[in-house]
Length: 441
Image (cartoon, rainbow, N blue to C red; front, side, top):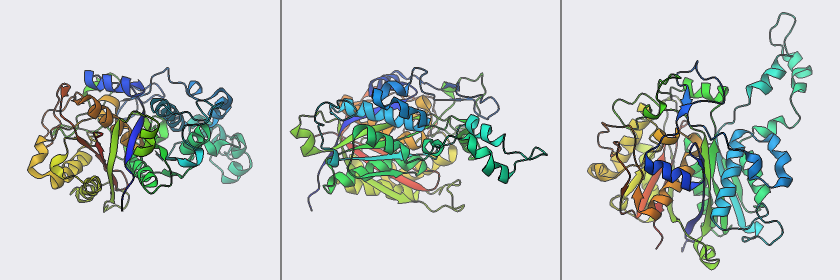
């Protein structure tokens, strides 16, 4: 059967380097890191006190229509990132939507415009919870379930839950931009964005939509989510006075862990014929995707499958879907978090696919610059891959020295002939995603 070709016409990354692909790409090529002491809360008691935080100038109220600003009161940080990324992507793609121009017909008919956004498990803000919990104590000062039901819950706004449901990222984006086509939310940790892009790809390929807003967003920079990352053993030691920009060392034999970065991205994926018919700029082609599930001894993926077999299966599936051989991949963007167990898993997976040729495949590492962005990673990485292909250039790599067979050692930005770039990641939970981003014909 013939397949509709899926292209990328809009890029909307939101990272610690700011809004949009231009600021991110320039920082990556300059070799600048945005990792710094966390402002959102006092993280000095954690193993890592620094991360990749969005600029203080980030304000979601400036990224939604005036008529929608009241709804920002029930947007958790993750939702704000997705809403901001969607606006950037729509504008970059040159689309008219209800959210950008309500007085004129939309470029894509609403019932032909889908939306698939990956999300993490959104942690509630402690101030909201403690206000409710403090009124739920019994006479001895202990938490009392009866008091929680009778008094404590009354301290929470009736719309409180709508702020923390993972599907609310896609919910707000679809309402703002009037996306009435197929919509879904995927919550598979680090693989969330990549799997969402794959979902959009299939929806467009089978003709259920002509375009989709797709990607993911995540923010772990709050005490509850941050604690989970520490308990999962993800952090590198980084005191409040440490130079955070030098801490994360992907694939390095001396790596000690990662630092978390909030962020994500939304992309406009579009059927090639639709994009060409409206004269759109095509950044790149989403030529193939793959997915798999790893076996986890502990059932939750805290201890990943060190062999990398299942991630390799996802990569191989993406290459088959794209119709290319491993030798045709010109660069790789793995998760590359600096967490030794995850880096080892990825290195083993890539070695299974590329064999002795792996050392010749330049790797693009993002975590030393913006942190490990969890559910937001895939969309950010694909946006970077699209810009790298357009510029025919590799961004700089930071910090790493001894990286074995993975070509991830520190290096300046350099020109590079790029036709196909592989983006892949494992995840906490064992889900794996892979995508091939290609140069337009």
